[in-house]
Amino acid sequence: MRDPVPSRSDHQALVPLRSSYCNDREMQELVAYFIDDLTPRMQAIRAALDANEVERLRAIAHELSGVAAGYGFAPIGDVARELEDKARFLQESDDELESEMELSTLSEKVEDLLTLCARALASRESCP
Image 1: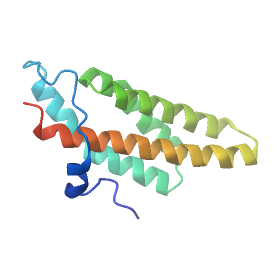
Image 2 (image 1 turned 30 degrees about the vertical axis):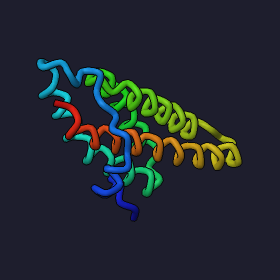
Image 3 (image 1 turned 90 degrees about the vertical axis):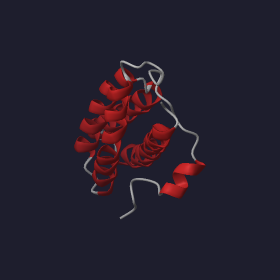
């Protein structure tokens, strides 16, 4: 199983994704809480994808899309919403070939989301 979180050296290569609330003193503690909670979320996303648990993946993406913007991470919320939509489509599709293609797209969306989350983790040190 792949490590859902890039290594520390990989983080250094990532451009940090900072919260839009990074400079808001009243929000800094909440933003830090959100960032700290990203690692278990990333692990759950990877585990759901690896286990082919599309419903679980959809539910995690739904939750993340709902909270990310509230902590100033709109790009994470946007990609999580796209992932949720792809997972829902895959669940509702009866066309086997179409489902196969959507599964590939779903995997790509997961990688996009995990990369954004890793960039947010990398911002931990650049956000006062």
